[in-house]
Image (cartoon, rainbow, N blue to C red; front, side, top):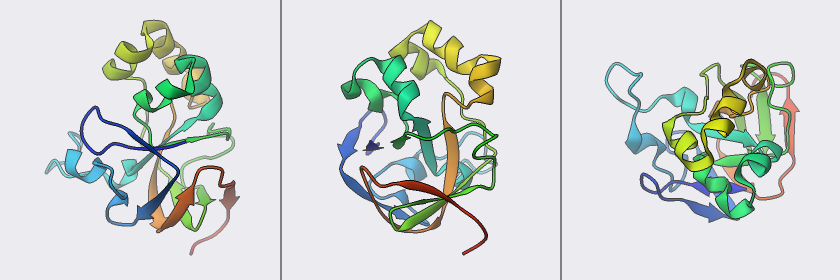
Length: 159
């Protein structure tokens, strides 16, 4: 699933999207939201794209219609643990390439209100954090078009 966030608390599930080096997922509000963690409040390039494992969100959300409520842009069937995709790993999706960042991605107040305290405890547990059940952050290193159903491939080296 690909979901963009045009405004706070809004979601658009789309069949294809463009990943742009500067803008992120075109039509998403990542850049406009900024980051409380940056000195000037600007968007954090290392959280440009958020990814959650589709099997985890399937368990937590119960129905596919609720997946996008998690707030991530990409939901993929891939082991997101550090053992499989540590920070620095590059993933090819469609004609785009993203790089996994070290920025933590944890269940927050919104996640808890949408899916419950138990779901948040599950993804934030020591094992949940090791497996990155809440997901991972990434930045775009090569812009391109992505589509639902694209195979996600780990790639080596630089572009």
